[in-house]
Length: 391
Image 1 (cartoon, one colour):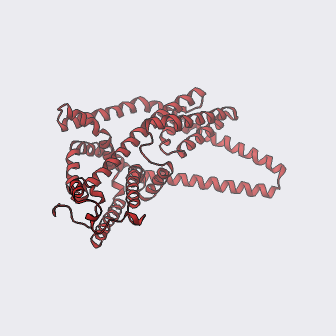
Image 2: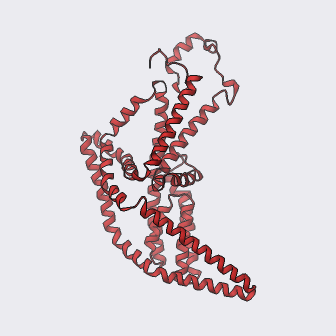
């Protein structure tokens, strides 16, 4: 038991130390996180080329070059249109604010006819204070972005270092995995490998599926808002598609932005109601058809846990924390499910699960020796020496 507790404390200390170091280095981790994510997503394509006897280095270059070419083509095709709409949105934004302010003044005037003037003045002052707080909060967010994860130096490092990191990780991916596997404790290696496979399955299923969901819904909202006649519909559609990454909250935020802009543009409730109905239809399709088909239930990431992870890791590590929130949520989820499974099979949950002191009394000698080589290493006492006396 003492040896088991020593191992447990060692791994807890290692995790705490790693989290502390990552927190200290969070300002320079962005290109490495992005490079690792790109390598993780592109590795299956490199493996396919490897099966066709294409050298690993050449396959990594070809796959990475094709990926970057797709990104550049997407930017060249989409950025000019987005630039025009963003410029128009910025130019029209003061007029929209003035329209909203006029509507608020009109609403307050109606209240003033029915309420005491002092109460209306207090309400006006409270509304002005809240608007000031909101604008101050938006300013802080923009300032933190400009001075943090998207500062010029970090942006340059993201552009130039990320492809280099992704290439080396793609080229040496199998070597890195083999090296890490050789470091695993021999007694529990198979159990750790099984959990790693579950983590990889969860990550790949969620990231690839959720990226497809965001792309489809972004195109759907962009085209639908443009057909409705909403200005800057394409920009809003793409923003809504990106926000869908956050379950429920993303769709609600995108819908609220679109409805507010529709009200500011048309000045009536007819088109805003049409936009709201559009988002109801989109969220219904996303929740009942698109996400179940493209993501499925195999990822086992509950929306509440995902939202909490995004907020928690964003608070701890900033912009980098938002990027690593989903992978870390998947890792923690797999490990928690594994720990819960082991707990339910342990004497702590049910004393009937206790292993007899003399294991030969629990089963016939022949069956014990016959099944000894097939025991699940994950169910041995962590304090017991490995079978055979050597790892």
